[in-house]
Image 1 (cartoon, rainbow, N blue to C red):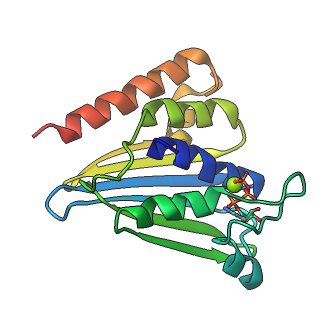
Image 2: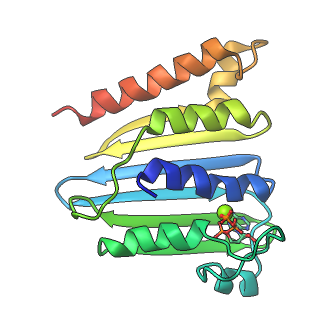
Length: 181
Ligand SMILES: Nc1ncnc2c1ncn2[C@@H]1O[C@H](COP(=O)(O)OP(=O)(O)OP(=O)(O)O)[C@@H](O)[C@H]1O
Ligand SMILES: [Mg+2]
């Protein structure tokens, strides 16, 4: 995959398939330490130990339509290709957390892509799920929490296109504000 936001979109599909009602995405950039990390966690069904051991193997999947599960192995490979790290923690009945860490300026590090588009699309298409998105850049933090937005908009559905547009703009603006020196 050419962009990290597409990996995120893909990994979140696993959380949705695992019936998560809360999904948290944390992106953290540190230019001094030269690290970019992506942390995706959910409160879905989780995995038992045997499944957890198999998930980084591209020839294993719990899906029945085709044999190969690629989401996790591709994300892992993307991190390892640029001297990064990859970690999964999962507990049956509790949820799952996936952390990928990249050397930020590595030549093979994929660009972030349009994260504002990705997050707003996830919110638009998953009515029953609450999303928390946090972006940290050199210690500064931007946060978006659909639970809080829902409190503010009251009767208006969060899927309303005006709300989705506002969310997209807020993420873009948030990124701009905390990344400028
Ligand atoms: N967040 C999660 N919660 C519960 N189980 C998960 C989660 N993420 C992955 N899994 C399990 O790990 C398997 C492998 O995931 P992976 O994304 O690599 O492949 P896939 O989803 O099966 O196929 P693909 O992503 O290629 O469509 C899934 O089929 C599922 O059983
Ligand atoms: Mg998948």
